[in-house]
Image (cartoon, rainbow, N blue to C red; front, side, top):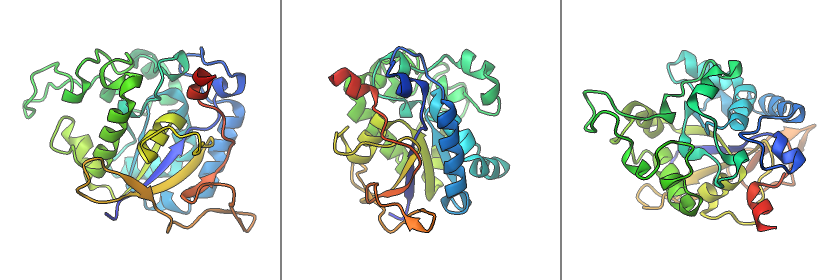
Length: 275
């Protein structure tokens, strides 16, 4: 398949600095905002110019990273009728406070997020064109009363199922299901920017968390699908993507699929739980 995914970990957040995973839905630090600004400078003349969809986890830190780092892309796509989509399935893995999203009410009251559509956090169908009854959750949400419940598909023990669902959504496999318009955009897009978290991105990209694949803050890695028919929607590195250079020197310290890296590999909550 020709579709290319630019998977981006959020910039530095307060729980990264303090190693305090009790901070609920942590926001970016000042350094995290600087990293996001650097992400903008280093990518606004490359893949931001022709990406045709951007999706983000609805936690605060990836949304803030996207709003700063991918501002030119978001502005262009919004004018084209394709504003940034929030995908609850991109939330971080564990059920610690730092990895648990805020309520829709709290997020909609946050002035920084006033331009975002939070309806996917409550994806209940009331459309006459839908085959689902009113107030029915999407089928794959079975057992999850809310997007931030960490139950059902959002249970940490089901992260592989969730990562597979995300890959299939990005490939366009779910365009005939709920949220037809959003899924259609995902199916039609050829270059998709995804902003999420270190652990879920590793499950999406590699099928496992993998200590050998630490993902730095504000690091972008490029992937494509291995095939159009693989039921697992396996990803492979898109190594033909030109690396971003800094001071005329190609970045040499990332993975082969790394396009740009602005921060350090701050630990995720999984490292905390393991220790």
